[in-house]
Amino acid sequence: MPRPSSPLPSAPEVLHPPASQVQPRNPLHGVTLEAMVTALAAHYGWPGLAERIPVRCFSHEPSVPSSLKFLRKTPWARDKVEGLYLFMLRELRRDMPRGR
Image (tube, rainbow, N blue to C red; front, side, top):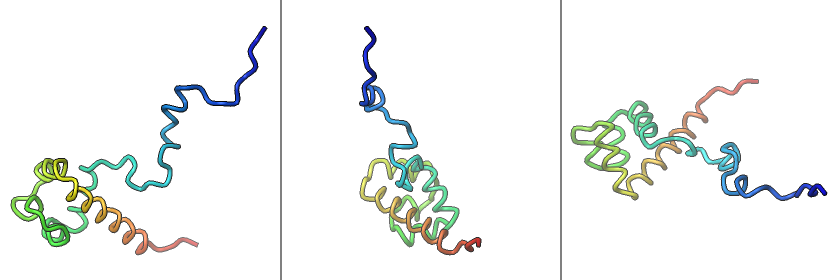
């Protein structure tokens, strides 16, 4: 006798939902720390980045690898980088001309 199909998802679907459903509204989802630092340095420049987040890795001989090494060990600084990255995205979105 065949089993009736269950309306509940199977265990693998519950533990590992499709990637598109994990965090659909999180703008940081899928963005690496390296991509954030690179985008911020390109947008503000290293001096501008050091002015906004005053840490030595941005002001004294800055580079992406040295910044990543510091940021991965320092949660409060990583939080500031993530916040500035979100602010930059909002700025860019606000300044973008709207299509009608």
